[in-house]
Image (spheres, rainbow, N blue to C red):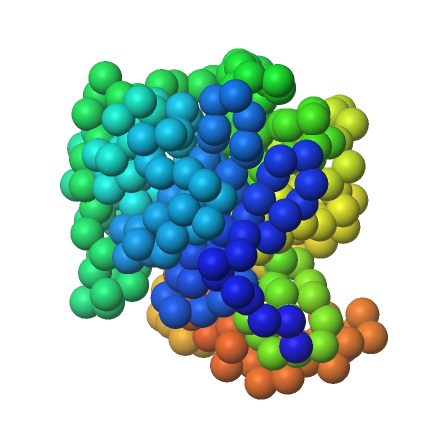
Amino acid sequence: METSTQATPESFGHDVYAIDLLEQGQPYRTAAYVILDDHPTLIETGSAASHETLLQGLKSLGLEPKDLAYVIVTHVHLDHAGGAGQMMAKASAAKLVVHPRGARHMADPSKLWAGAASVYGDRVTSLFGSVQAVPEDKILIRDHLDTLDIGQRSLTFFDSPGHAKHHFTILDESSDALFAGDALGIRYRTGLTGWNFEFILPSSSPVDFDPDAVHSTMEMLRKYPFQSVYHAHFGKSPREEAMYHTERAARAFEQLILSTYHDNLTPEAVAQSLRDWIRDDLKAQGYTPGDMAVLDIDVLVDALGLLHFAKKHRANPI
């Protein structure tokens, strides 16, 4: 089984490094990425609970927060941007780069926190830590096709809904790769699951999961010739593997929930259906999955998102 040495960020070449944030105490769950260029850039902060781990990772790359020029969050879910306030309080020279729909939630995270609490309940603080606001003058919005010069390279931003309406992805032509956040799925590494294979699934967490938007995002991104994807969860995938499995499973999740939805359907029942589908699908691909309990948190959150999607679909059928 692969093991994570948090003090040694994973190098992907082209001055791109992944810091394992040990989110929720688990290796290979959530990564922050660092681009070492003339204007050092951090992509994702993780949650506030991972802040000290992130600082240690930056230190191992010879960086302190004051050295950062930009802190980018692909979207404002707490496992990606919950630590932005803490980081920006220390990164005195940096701007926080965020999607237009996410900027207000960084300046005033009260609704973001309330939304997370509605999903995670009493566990929200222990899972994610406490969220701090980011001063508005520290926030830099990037919209679809906007660019950002960070020195020897320029990053291009793409509006990428499907997982969240406030989500962008970031093309780095220098590394021939896309920083994808959650837009192109979750790569489950062996160091997280304990299984002897890796696989990709979409995240359907509340409240914006939209399989039609997933499809549109994939069609848009296919117009650009990058070869690799950097997932926030976790690591690097070939582009077509990430696109194919994310879109295929998003459609399967859609069919599963719309074919079984009724007013009394519980999150636990949906979660069990998801476990069954994932296990059967992995077996059909030739894999032998281990204890499905390693997916419990993700599957339950996905189930909540699918229920929300089904309720919206019933209220506004196409």
